[in-house]
Amino acid sequence: TYMHAIWHLFVIGGSACHFSAIYFGVLPYTA
Image (cartoon, rainbow, N blue to C red):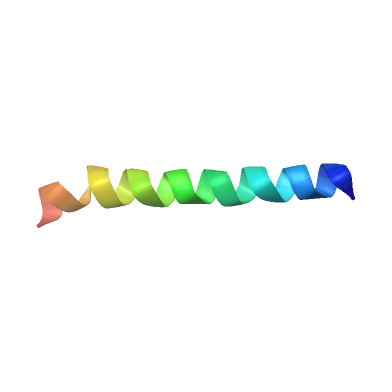
């Protein structure tokens, strides 16, 4: 269960970084 929790943290963190990268990286060019 410990490794499962770590895996979830990585997935959530990765998706958050991906979302922020798209939001702050792509949005200024399309706006």
